[in-house]
Image (cartoon, rainbow, N blue to C red; front, side):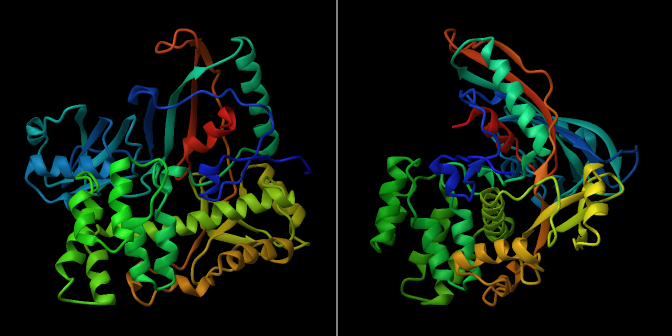
Length: 443
């Protein structure tokens, strides 16, 4: 496949997304003007009964982060946060619906949980908690506002982009900006320093790196950090940046105590365990995005294997299983591509870890080149300073299939001289709606 690639904006290039997969001009517009414009409903792979140690409830929230609302529910119930389980984190600035489990909780206790813009509806009981991966995916209903142009021309552009994506087999399965931080994409940068055993660099990056989308107050505080003025930085750091403040508190407290690596280890350890792990995962996601971008540059197909690729097969639910993989040889090429066409096999790229096996030939050269450019070896993912953050790696499909329902175009309720477009689609777990939307919006 040879075509002139359309370059991504700078904000996406920072996270490894360098190109669009389609060439048709986008419709423009803006998303998330209000939470109700971004509706997410989890498609669960669980069925609940009437007995068990866990109460299962349907949680609907508006403009709440999943981890934050879990803490709030636990606080209202006066129980440990660890008693609440969920299958996946959902967007904050959105209206989202998902299942949660509450250990040793009676449904009458939920009557005491009254939180603004949150509803909890008991739906059953189980002897198994809701945990990561207990879902097929998510249904999205998204309104794109402030769309300019001729009303009749908007569906034409959408149809043309949909046709391009269908011909390509789907949308490149990039990790979206939420994986890295929407206004401050820092997580992968911290992750790179962690796998380089540079704990001081990781801590100081998290506190001090400045991004243009931040508030002036936050930028000023981070500038003080970079000048070594930690006490002044703590005094000026906005209250809502609680993780930065917690790390700074630890650094300031230890100025006359622990020094060197121990000081920075203490500062890093104040972060929640799930956030600590996110840094390394985000760096793996960044490398994956770079590999997809490089594959587009080289004109290698996404919906067809070439010799040297590694494919994975689906599980009993038809979902790609990164544990069931096979390297593509010349002898197996035709048979594997038949399976790919029937949705039974998927071309993958690595989420690089310490035991990652690269592809062969041009594919392997591409994967190794990304690591070489980053000056990183896969062995670095065995992290000496923080062994609990080490990762052996995995694989992820290059494409995510999308079937767009018929879009609705109407007058924008918030901007009557512009149009709004409603898009509805399903995505399997681990894929990002913003990665689909960027192809249709193109900015």
